[in-house]
Image (cartoon, rainbow, N blue to C red; front, top):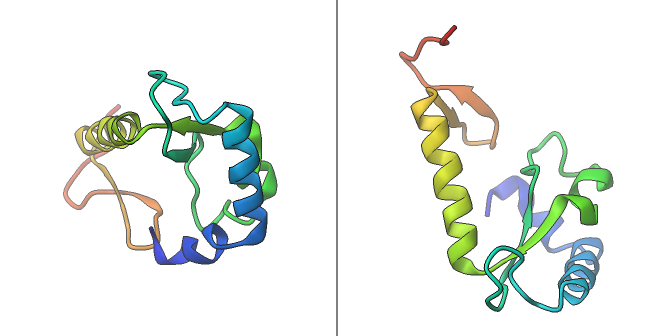
Length: 104
């Protein structure tokens, strides 16, 4: 967990939202049907949007995933970013990797 996200993930609002969302999908991974483990934000949280409940606490932006599906989500996304010359800085912001030029 990123340091800037710790307060949010420990908040009563998140814990209540998380439980309600898991209950709404019966605790099942929404991709493969196995037991779920992680409430995933489809639009990834960042320091800029984490305090916006329309992003961070919105059921439309959540997906309950098992560990395998969650790992696959992040691996595929990070691989695509690296191929595109992008990376995340220490604050979670998306930046162009040093030495990479923007493709046209």
